[in-house]
Length: 180
Image (tube, rainbow, N blue to C red; front, side):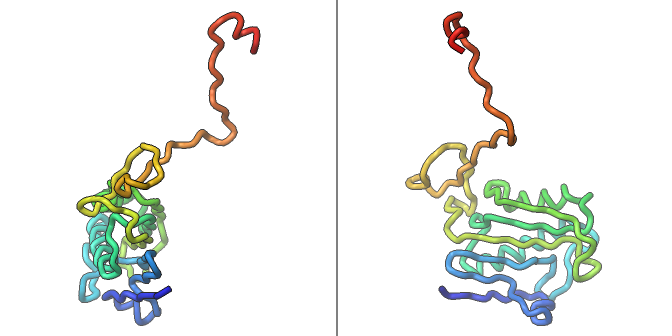
């Protein structure tokens, strides 16, 4: 299988020895991405939401260069320096992924590579997994095998908590109650 390396503009890439993204087959892995502009300067200093949006713009460019799009993203990981700002970061995330709804983790870290960096985001994508108009996946609760449904994302019903059993139906007649 071919391995395609996608470079970005981060000054850290050559120092650390990593790629902005790597594509292997239909899988794309985008490295932790911060809010840098094309010159490597931090965008949105002091603003978690602005930095998250810039991170996502950079990720979108990397996905595009790898032949993927936001609708193909299946997992995101978000690192923030202040978890109290989760709503601002989450809102930016939802601007890209509200309809896609990838698996997501957000954690607070002590710090990132530079003091002015507040947010870092990484994503995994599977090309072709988010087939829908305008780059958005469709979420549906319907069952199906994925054939002929336009590649719709299937929402799996929530499971019962471990150790619980479904409620038994109550007997309707005396005969049913005795049989129990």
